[in-house]
Length: 189
Image 1 (cartoon, one colour):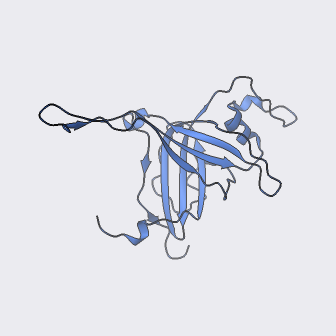
Image 2 (spheres, one colour; image 1 turned 30 degrees about the vertical axis):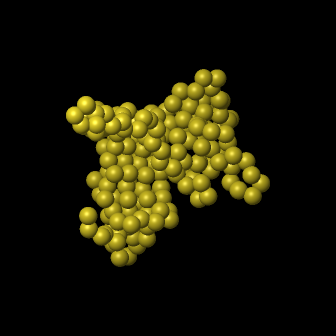
Image 3 (cartoon, one colour; image 1 turned 120 degrees about the vertical axis):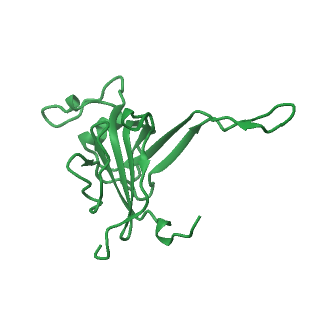
């Protein structure tokens, strides 16, 4: 594997976008704040608690025969998820955290919390920015729902932890997403 200096990313800034399920990935992102009209920015997220990509599932198991003790390794079932901390107290954040549709916003602007949450299914796009380098991470189907306690601290922003579980998509033959290689916005960025 060659040494590629630009591929070593420091995720100093990033943007998270949602769109309707199975929205195609943007062809070329030149502005990390605007990947295209189909995508809606979810707003501010925590700098202290950066997004976390998790892997949950069985570890591969090595199985063998009498003749070869390490003949084959199993392919375990694995679930991937991305958790981020929204710091905006808005109806959109509440919908994702509490698992509710747009019909929960009341005429006075308040948000009615459902007794039984329903994960919101959406396409998810992360655009990680390192100077003039961009790293887009696209997932056409995710299930979004609040994943932990809302964090209150008198010296920090209020945080709403939301986890996006990556789902298989027919548009990708059942796969869960595509991560691009690093692109450049050019020397003027």
